[in-house]
Every structure is written in structure tokens, then in C-alpha cells.
Image (cartoon, rainbow, N blue to C red; front, side, top):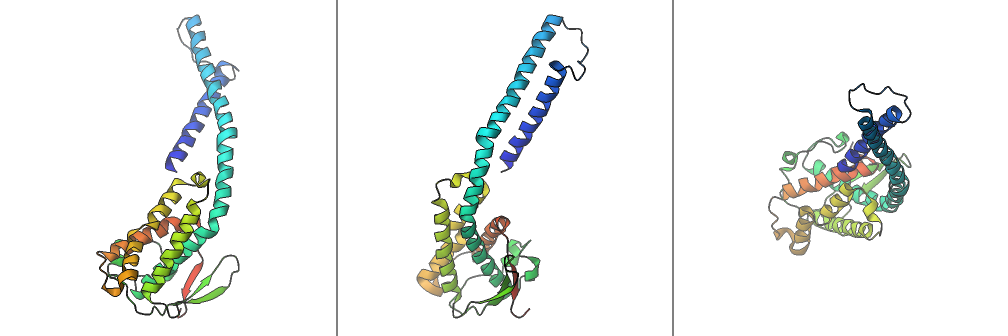
Length: 246
């Protein structure tokens, strides 16, 4: 994304320079710079810069019409296709991070999950078969009212196992879209890393062997998971989140 922005800025600057040169050499709108060079040589130099400037402007026009606009159109189509799946992924992650924040008293949920560091997750050593007992409310921007949710009888292991299956399924659906390459590189890379991340590998280990599983530095895995969430959350409208006790 940064490379794309840099290229766009360079293209704008080149077109501005080209228009100035054309206004100066061909249209005589701007005064020429005085010099003592032979007139024939000056004319050749002017012709060269004029041709180059015209080439830049014409090339930019065709790039805009044939490449940039179609790519933007494809990007909008892809975003519409993946947005529901992306919303599901990020909402699941938001709920999980909110659970960790609440259980380990990391910070106030009203801070919108921002600014957490790896030290904030230092207390998280493992997950178990204990019931989550996690009750919360969510307010979506579409309906503007609070909807209650509860973890019910789910344990930590069963909850995160279920989440891993859903997230993996949604990411695979996104990657199966033929024109997915039209999306932003950062989004695609983050989804790919999330799919096989350290956290979900740990969850798979717990799901297979129960609480006896050993996942080293599990707190770092949770922080990596949170880092992916912080990136993906920029692509969705996160709902407001409250614990039922708030």
C-alpha cells in the first residue's frame, strides 16, 4: 500500500513538471529561462523535453483509463464480496480479546481495544476446560440497539476451537475468490498469517490433548493474535462492546 501511494505521488509530480514544461516550451505561457546556448541546440533540447512531457501525460491518461479505474472497480467488487466474511472474522476476534481483557483485568473495554502491548498479555499462560461465563452486549451501527450475547456452557477450549474452525473457513472462502488479488496486500497477508497463526496452532493442541497440552509462551501467541486483530479492525466497522455488568 505504501508503494502504491509513493508511485501515485511520483506520477503526480511528473505530470506537474510535464505540464509546466509544455506551458513554457510549446504554449509560451511561462517565460523561458535566459541562456547563452546556441539556438539550434536549445531547440533540440526543448523538443526533447516537450516530447518527453507529452509522453508522460499521454501515458498517465491511458494508465488511468486502462489500469487504475478498472483496478479500483475490481477492488470495490472484491470488498463487497469479502466484507460479510471479514466482519465475521473480526467480530469473533473482538469477542475473544474482550474475554481475555475481562478475565485478566487488562484494561477498560471502553478503550476500544487499542494500544495493548505484549506486557498486557503476560498473565495469560494457557486456556482450559473451565466454563467461560462471559456475558456481554453489542451495539451494531446498522440497528443502533444493544444485543445481548453469552458464552453459555462453552469452555475456553471448545469456544476457541469453534472460533478457529469458523475463521479458517471464512479465510478460505475469501481466498477462493478469483479476483482476490485486487485487494490490498496488507489485508491478504494478514489473513494468511492469521489462518495459521501461533495462537490457533496452540488452540489446535489444546483441542487435541486437552489441558495437558503444552504451548510455550502462549501469552506471546495471544499478543500476535491481537496484533492481527488491530490490523483487520481497520477494514470493518467495529460494534460497541459492553459487559452485562457495566
